[in-house]
Structure formats: C-alpha cells, structure tokens
Image (cartoon, rainbow, N blue to C red):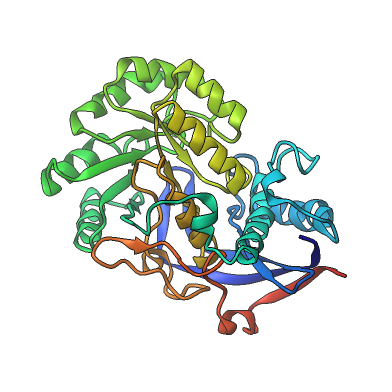
Amino acid sequence: MRIDRIRVFRTPLNLVDPLRTSDGIHQSRIATLIELTDSDGRIGWGENVAPAGVAYVGESAESSAHAMTDLLAPLLAGRDIDVFEMLPDTWWGIEGHLFAKHALESAVWDIHARTENKSLREVLGGTRTSIAPGVVVGIADTIEATVAEVERRISQGYARVKVKIAPGHDVAVLRAIRESCGDALVLQADANAAYSRQEIDHLCSLDEFNLQFVEQPFAATDLPSHVLLAQRSTTAICLDESVCSVGELMTAIEMKACSVVNIKPSRVGGIGAAVQMHHILKSHEMNAWVGGMLESGVGRASCLALASLPGFTMTPDLSASSRYFASDLTEPFEMVNGEIAVPTGVGIGVTPTEAVLSSPETQIQTVFQR
C-alpha cells in the first residue's frame, strides 16, 4: 500500500473516576489519533497512548507526539508499505519511540485488514470472538474505599480484579479484599515498580493471599531482583515495563525472571512485535495477557483483536468503555454477560464518531498530503 495522507486528531478524554497508582494520579488525557489514507482512499486509524508528563518506559505524550509527527510519519509518506515488515527494531531505522511507532503501525494494520476485507482479528489469527475482561482498581484513600470499589466491579461482572499496590498499601488492603470477597476471586496485584530488593521478604508475605501474580514489583532494569523474588516466593511474577522488545523478553525468559508477561502493543512498538512475543511465550508454554493503557475505543479495538490470539492465556486489562470514560471516541465497548465482543467489522471494526471528529475541541493537524 502507499500512504497519501497523514492526519493527527487531538481531543480531550476525561476519566469517570481518577485512577491512582504508585506513580501518580490519572484524571484525563488528550487522546491522540492517527488517520492514514492510502492511494485507494482506504482509511486506517491508530492511537498514541503515551501518558502525559510521566515518561512511561522513557516516552511521554509530549515526546511521543513530536517523534510521531516529525520523525516517524515522514517515513510513511508516499511510501509503499508491507505491514508485516514494520517491526520496531528494524523497519523504521530510528531507535525508541515505541508508542509513536505503534500508533502509526496500528493504522497501517487497519488499512491492511480493510484491503483484505477481513477483521483485524482474522488477519492476526485470533480464535476468540469475545473476551472476559479484567478490571483495574487504583489506590484509594482508605482500605474501605478500595474494598468497596472491588465489590462494585465484581457486581458488574468482571472476571478478575487487579489491585494497584505500593509500600504501605499492600498487605492490609489485600487481606481486607480477601476477607470481604473470598478466596474464589481471581486477584492480582500491580506494583508499578514501587519496591526495592530490600523489600523481597515483605513481598513474599503476599503469598498468603493466593494472588494470580504480582506484576512488576521492581524497576524495569532490575531483572536480578525479579529473579530472586521468583525463587523465594510462591506467587507468580509478571513483567510489564521490563519487556519492551523481543530481546528483553528472551533475556527475561533465560534468567527465569518471570512466569507471566503482560504484552501491551504500545509498549513493545506495535502489533507485529506483540504477535511475535505471543508466539515466543506460547512456544515456551508461559502465561501471557494483553494490558491496557487507558485507550479510547480506537486503541481498545486493536487490543481486543490481539487478545483473541490463543496464546494469551490470562484475562486482559480491556474493560468496558464505561469503566474509564463517560463518553468514548467510538461507539462504546460494552460488557454483556461478563464478556466484551471482539470487533467483527473490517479492519479494527470501529471509527471515531462524527461528533468527535467535528467537535470544536478536536484539533486536526495534516502531517502529509500527497
């Protein structure tokens, strides 16, 4: 395919409730959408979900937007493209900028699937037509508030709950949740790298809560501490920020630093890289799941297609639109009987609504026009 036009749409997206983690409070974001148009007039959509201010895996919304429009988008302009070759470590010729690469590459995938007259799920080889999602519960001011939030999400039909933890907000919180909700609840804990090696004994004390896993307890570069914890704890260790490339995934596997991996296509530089990692983890018989980054419906659609692959063995962080947003940028994803349908329309199966595209709050930038 040849790309003849590149446009960027920026529009406010407010959260229903603030999401507090160990690294800050998320209340709103500027959704950054990419629209690519090929030489046959087909349109593909992608989303850059790099967080504002906080440089998650070295990339903030501000730095990612610059890289996307000024460095990477020109590489697509007027060029014949094969989406299967667009791997983040080789195709672009520029290191880093994984969120920006993912945004552009996912729009190319959308066009490719539309060209094939197939859904993205079909193109990727997905086998599930619906997915039972999990839900994330942030850090609240009180233990009682956290427990109440968990109970509310269970009542909404979520299959599992992942609770954000941090030093001083872990043992007592998890104990209260177990006492209130029982042992049958599939419960996970996400540390967002909030702990140090000196706290390994403390983290081992979480074993009593029968967690499905503890996610990213230590800094992204501190694989040795993850190895030590994996050796001493009976709770599975899941990696997130530590795995941003196939090379880092192989290192983590070889070191036995984890038994579970969270794959976020934005964090690893694209859908193609995420599929590669899926195949590797499946071949090693390791558990994997698809994580979320507060995507709008545009990003959520491609994540659901990815999560339909058979090697993603655990519940994804892909909640209904209403979990985070009063109004989504696409038709909302809704949970029915505890599951969300994987889009079946051609491409990613959704587009931003006309109300969003024509809103006076939406800023439109034409990056390239043939």
